[in-house]
Length: 348
Ligand SMILES: NC(=O)c1ccc[n+]([C@@H]2O[C@H](COP(=O)([O-])OP(=O)(O)OC[C@H]3O[C@@H](n4cnc5c(N)ncnc54)[C@H](OP(=O)(O)O)[C@@H]3O)[C@@H](O)[C@H]2O)c1
Image: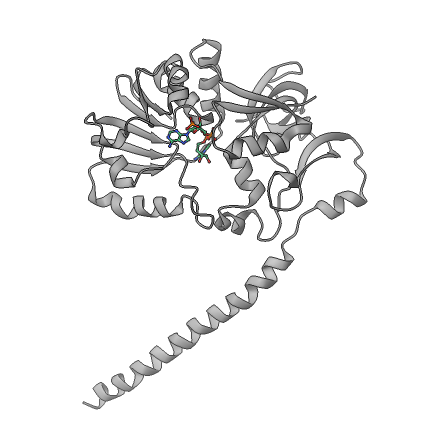
């Protein structure tokens, strides 16, 4: 009896301690957030003090914002480590990822990229160019080799990258929502090359383009809603995210796979996170698989892509080319979300 009374007395005490601890943690976070925000900085000021020893031109941004924050600056060429190759970049293609980094949106990403200012001040990922020099341990490349790949800071005249660098079964049916953009034009061709039967979703002006890339069937989204189709697909590759998850999943065959690549840009704070969480929560209750695909740049996949390109099975679709000096105009164009294939920056 005495024990029971003592336990009852202890419970409110435990609750109070937990409540105070929780409150203190929240207060500490609230106090730390503005400090972390104002302390977040980047190397922009240091660069104006030290002049580059071995200069090259690169696209640089010191603050988050619209395309006007982009500058062509003179920076140091990357130094070459023993296991790296130095590439003279001939062209770099833009991705919506680049303008997300430039604007720092969705804001959640700033936890990693820098709260107030971008930690990494260089932009670009995908590049093509020529090997200029190789490190002492490099065995697979030599100067003069034509290469392509992905590395942060690709919007520059040179980059250094280490030497060491999605697949559907034949006969599967794949629906690609957003078939005419930078991702879609590659996805249609790769899925075809891997033996899939491909349905592309795009607007009227891009129907011929998507068909010319090999799509077996094209749905014009201005005339029909693919989520109302009676057809069932093994894979839905969604680059747009303009239909609810349950509706998009509705066109999947039992056991099919919904792959979210992009879209859902309507939330400036969370970006695609809402849909990612919905997928995780509903996954155990449905017969199909759902997942968020994040590009993983690795040698094995790039080798397959290179082989497909050399064999003429995959051809990059280039919408527009801009010289490096017009990178801001190029990003502005990409931000409109109307690109037909890739937007490319050429290094003058
Ligand atoms: N997860 C990853 O690793 C990864 C990698 C790269 C990109 N992404 C994301 O994937 C998404 C697509 O990237 P992207 O490079 O393809 O973008 P993009 O090139 O800017 O896409 C533009 C294309 O989308 C089409 N489009 C616009 N609204 C559409 C709709 N309602 N239905 C079908 N098509 C529509 C446009 O055609 P119309 O103007 O004719 O409509 C245009 O051809 C972006 O959100 C990007 O951030 C993710």
